[in-house]
Image 1 (cartoon, rainbow, N blue to C red):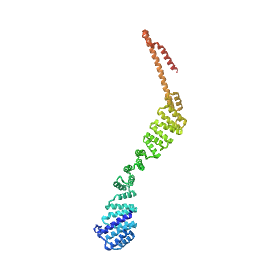
Image 2 (cartoon, rainbow, N blue to C red):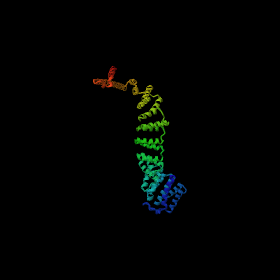
Image 3 (cartoon, rainbow, N blue to C red):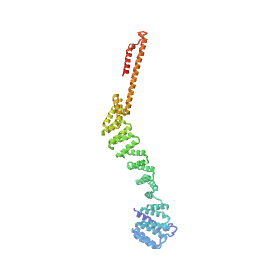
Image 4 (tube, helix red, strand yellow):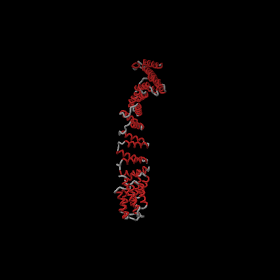
Length: 463
């Protein structure tokens, strides 16, 4: 039903109350009359008939104007104003209707029992004309006069206040509507409250409503995005990540940039292994493109997670994608972490041959180390000399020191053998004095063994 018949009916009902039951109704103090005279009553009934039965507001207005030309008591004047307002609403003259109703109130023609309803009618008229400030003014007068808003009135008051940017007042009415509607409220109520909570910076209440909506609509993307967005705005990135992760696990995130956001989140919050597993899974599924940059990132993630065994096939594939020296160098480093020295040297030599290695000296050092670990000392020295850097020289010095230490140990052992053999010979000579039966059999070879030990020591001195 449109606004015209609603207002016309409401105002006309008030007028008929005055006309039909006036004798029993308490009137304003300044008007003690309680009924129409027979002459004016006849004209009034003609106006009523034209309006209600014939739907002819112009003819009804003619009868009202005739009444206004007659001598009326205060009771009749009030009835005429009210019926005139109903006629003007039907004719689209809302300003005239308001003027008649306000005159009826101001002149004391409206009894206390009808004052609230009359203010409510004016409120509705201003609302229909989008005069929101006036509508709010008369809504307050209506409630001050004892008006009791129902659920729909509360919703109107919420909307009007929001349009006038009275968000706190709008929220008061919207919350009362939600209390009446309960969790099963229409979506427009939820959305309106969420907007108001956002506008009044009440994020906790907003989050609660979003969660209620999410329980009703778990696959609705914009709800998840709203919750995550709130956490982002509140600088609670960890919570935002948990929401995004739930969206990913629930299959809501499908686009490449969304999936990469999850990868980056994992990496940002120091979970590189999960970042790598997610990236690898989505590349294998074809939802993230397998580019060189993506493969490089995957290798980085596995290496940071110290999953060198998993990083190796990724690095190998990336290196083959564009014959990247830098990637072969990384492959060599990964093999070195696993102490797979032959593979380390092969990868580093490929890196040097492919080009693009930022620090060739460092690559040669790693090649030298791989040879050293495999016992190829000449090859290691060659690689360390090729490095021609502090690291290579350090390794050469270490090997020199190691070899000097080894030589000193060999010399010490040779000297010790000579001395021990001499001591043995002296014991044998002392025993010989006692007779051959007391001399150990080893004494028969002591001279030869001493000669051999002295010759070996002499050779070490000449080397």
